[in-house]
Length: 262
Image (tube, rainbow, N blue to C red; front, top):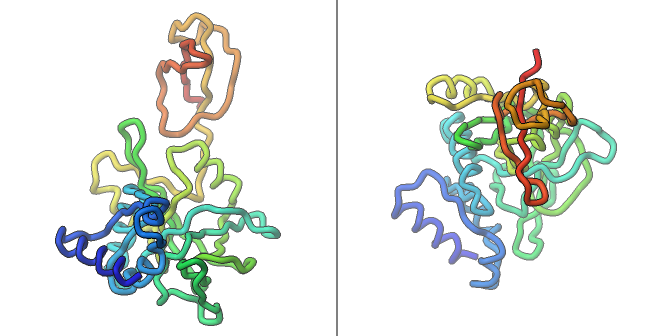
């Protein structure tokens, strides 16, 4: 495990890196016969942030959150995992074991599970975020959240509560985001929103806000106007704009046109 620590630290310093995105499974087990999770936890408290599963966008997100707090506390990389068994607005943010031990909840007993640290993160206010690119557009999903009580589990984790989890889930499903998120202690969503003002083409997206912005319409003749027969209506991802699109279904091209509804 200490070899992993030295390995990542050496890469960090040789490249003057601010953060690393690494393939942590399954190549590490195949190549070295061990998981790097415990090393990533140790490195987080040493100021070397290593993000799981080759997630470059996730690494960028974690770096942004680290900058938002001026490096005073390490970022987390808790992914959407499962909903709370009793609280309809609560979700488990979890990963195998890379969170810094300094963030452990005081009364949470820490242990190793197959070389993966397991403990709950301390309660309080957090900021959640996800930087994502899709179809030439870039978004920074962000928002303020707070922890809540939830069942014990393995790995490093925290239970958090949203204003409306069902709407958050719909935002993730409809894109352009995936379930990997980054979190950091304190409420800093206003800093992320302000940051986006200075980065051309980077759109801030509040995780606790959701708007239906239109429907996809199937145009019978592919004319690109509303004169065709509308056979289907359903919500569209907010990163798609008005216009004509072609979708392959069963090997055949189907013409789709999008019209934003007022």
